[in-house]
Length: 158
Image (cartoon, rainbow, N blue to C red):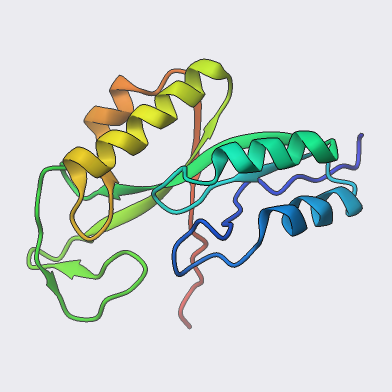
C-alpha cells in the first residue's frame, strides 16, 4: 500500500448544512478509489459515527473516527456577540476575535474515541453559543489518544 491515499477530513450527511455525502455511497467511492481507510469529521457532532463504522467494516474499509470541533476563541463558556459579516468562523466578535475556529480531531485508539465522545458532549452541554464549542481546557483534559490537525485551508488574497 505504498501509493495509497486516505481522506481524513470528510463531512457526511451528518454535517448539518455542510455535507451531502451519503455514507454508503461515500464508503463505496473510497473503496473503488482503492483507499484502505476513510475518516469522518462532521461539524461539531458525532451523530453518524456508528453508521459510518458499520458501513466501513461491511465494505472492507478501515474507519477513522473523528470530528471537526469548533474551538472557542477564549473559553467555551464565553457568549460573544457577532458583528460584521458572518463567515465559516461565525464572524468577528465585538473585540475583533473570531466567534470560533475549526479543529479536526481524530481518534487514534479506543481511549481517543471515548475522549472524542466526551469532548463532543461537553461542547454541546457547556459550550454552545452559535455552535457546540470546546476550548483548551477541555482539549487538555481529553487529549489522550487524539490526533489534532488544522481544519481549514486558507488562500492568500492578492
